[in-house]
Length: 472
Ligand SMILES: Nc1ncnc2c1ncn2[C@@H]1O[C@H](COP(=O)(O)OP(=O)(O)OP(=O)(O)O)[C@@H](O)[C@H]1O
Ligand SMILES: [Mg+2]
Image (tube, rainbow, N blue to C red):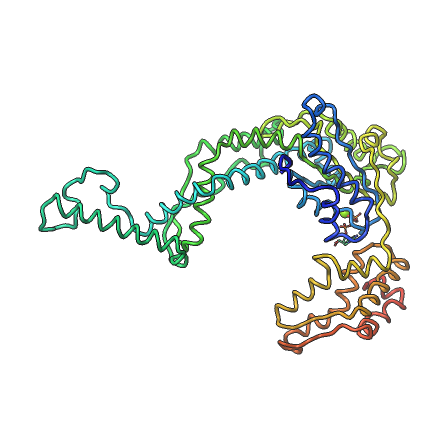
């Protein structure tokens, strides 16, 4: 988290992004700086902290060059509340001018989850103790008198001939000893497969339908109302038979939840969202109007920009966890800006995104590396898919070069859809193979994708413009 000394340095952040995204060094650098600046600000003197405003970033690049991918990976790295919205969604009918604040509420939600998770982690061993006890109770229920020093008479097995003082106490002892034996077995993990019956809390009540909600209530208060009603209703529990391994998971979560103070969680979460939160606004170009024409969708687009403005500039947004001040939230916006230009955004909004980074168009060489290098590279994905059928799939380097070059060619001749072209080309190439496994190509087969195979399957299509328009 932000307060830890282990927070990634800019170079480390870039290195993390490099594992998934090829090229786009400029964008990676700037995103890394912005992220590290969050940490730096929190380690600056208090009075200075208020003054330091985040340098919001605008990422500009044509479609399929990695904008959204950078945001997605950043979320994983940030270790801070992060939320991603599409600006265009606010132009949809019914959304206009109303729900732009929902992105801040989302962020608060993320922050609460994050803090809750951290606190649960902290009380885990304490919770595990309680869980062990309840699992044990389910396995070997304690005798009613257990735990107290006064032994009530008559609790032994019915008809016991022994005196009321002796037998019960030895029953108790027996019970205790059995429990201890099972406790040890539990700790050694010997009983994980065994089934027990536990009580689990029913999640989610009926709630108020959003659509039919009382008029005049905004989403935040409606949510609050729902939560309040939820907490007033008695918690329903249900009995379930589960394996001990599963019971452990379910109960651990419940016990840990009991041990954390939700009020504290909320407070910390709000502070975290305010100081470390990142909101990624994708497709911002879709709300910029290329023409100054009046009426129609342009009005709603500009409306969305005007709605965005106060949030990006800094304002107080009510969430169900409390008021979130957006002054220090980092905003990263991205768009292809094919039709519109960044200068088509209203000036106030342009001013709030001082750092502009342009993403480069991808080259043939980039395509080759994208096919091969990222942790989630397409070739690796298909290899894994076929591996599930015990079929080995390998790609010759020459084949990948050829694929990259075909994708590049189709992009320049038909339409440039960036790295997304690799998906269409690849799925076309492997289509027959994917169908034939496992019926015609059985387990333990080895399929080597060669340059010849690539040419044979795809070259004809590339030559035929009409065909590639539809198929590739
Ligand atoms: N530089 C890159 N390195 C690795 N993979 C990439 C790169 N650029 C794009 N991709 C891959 O291409 C696909 C589309 O990329 P992404 O969603 O980031 O596009 P985008 O820039 O957001 O485009 P759009 O403007 O259309 O939203 C993803 O599957 C992504 O993994
Ligand atoms: Mg995108």
